[in-house]
Amino acid sequence: MSELRDFMREYAASIYRLASGFLEARRRLIATLEGRELAELVDDEHTVEMLLGGFKPERRGQRYPPRSLARFYRDVIGVYIQQPERLAARLRDGLPLSIASRGIRVAASKTRPVSQIEALRDAARALLESLGTDASEPQEVDTNDPMWAPELVRQLLSAIVDGMPPYSRKALVLYSAWSITAALLEKIAEKDERRELEELGLEEYARFFGADVDPLRIVYRAQPGSPLARYRCLVHAGARLLQLSELEAFYKKPDPVKDMLQAAMRHVSRASKELRELLDLMASNASQRSQCLPRAECPGEPPCLPLGAVWAELDVEVEDTLAKLGKGVEAGVGELLSALSPLMIYGLAIIEKRYDGGDKGLIRIAFVAEQKPPRDKAG
Image 1 (cartoon, rainbow, N blue to C red):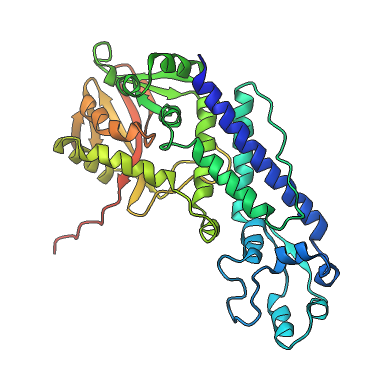
Image 2: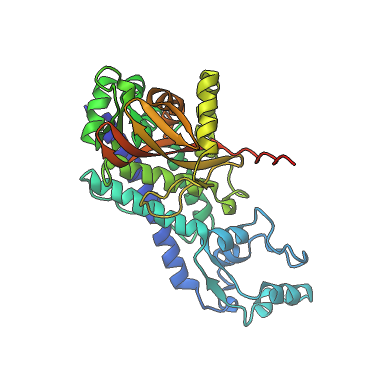
């Protein structure tokens, strides 16, 4: 059986086809329009609709209403007219578009959505290559229809969500393989799936004291460059695209990182008070904090966390069954792994080896934590 492999291949192929089709259509559009005078194009109603659809010359400071087509092409596609204020003034003076558009040229620039769609395409292609599959042909697009771009982006966003954790169980199994204990792996993945995960790049990464009798003390991870690692990059590229503010006015879309965090925190809330306090203690001792997930050698920008959450990193000395968390604080290794488990299920905690000296070692723990306000100093 190869259900997980097939899932990844179909997901990556769908995204690659749509993303590459979008980018190729945009390239052709720019090659056709960039630098041309708007007056040359006024007889082409479809092009005028792309560049001026919803344009409001009478609205000072808001020529492009939030859901206007012209705003979509400007903010998302990166194709727009120069000197919109000059055009607006002429139109307000009563000049016909054929005259008002003289000297107004079409410009193009790369937008954040375009850059992220490029990263998405690259991540999908890398995953397909790691699976030994050729990339599919780009989606064919008729750019004469001014609605091609909003519709194609809508299809792309829908395809992204379809194979994204936490909305798919298979996606969650694949994503959590970034770093997971053997105990959790047995809980979330079936026997055939665990075997397939190993074929896709899951490897035993760390064994802590007592691992022979307790699977909680065995940590697996996705090998760098493996299909599992490439899948995570694809998820991150898609999740970041879903978060971009440029798309908010045009699409109602979920935030998978926020939804995974909420699900993980529900698991955390059901843990014992001692384990919750241990998580808080690790977060307070963290040496590094970031608002976004780590880039992890992936193309594009990583997704960011919702307000109130941070990505925290903490170096921990491990000796036998004891973990030294810094500032004189110690905890059992088993307790530490138990505290991280609700986050690991959703791929929101990882363990990295810094130094392995047998019974002694140094590990780095990275995980999502609540961002709590600093305590006021006495006096």
